[in-house]
Image (tube, rainbow, N blue to C red; front, side, top):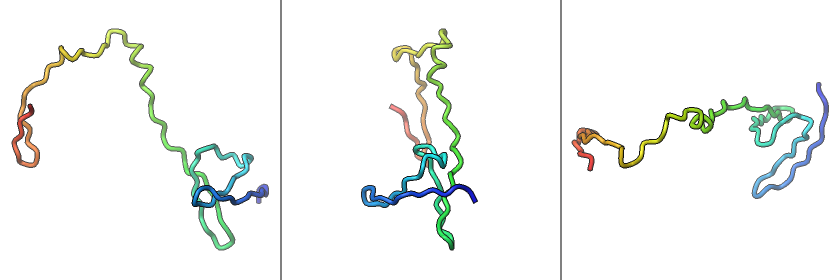
Length: 90
């Protein structure tokens, strides 16, 4: 068995909350799985979700790539077939 810690249950809004000691190593905002067992409860951290890639810094590294101004944007007129209905884009 590992270390033993004391924690206190408190009211948070309309729910009850359990403050976990920092020594357990959980990070703020981390999600956990709480299981009820015969002898009590177990708490396990969920695996981290994959991080999203931030591409905001790439735009400045490609100086020749610039947005197309609205007056230079060309749209092709075409008919769309949604669920067998022929629709024409205005």
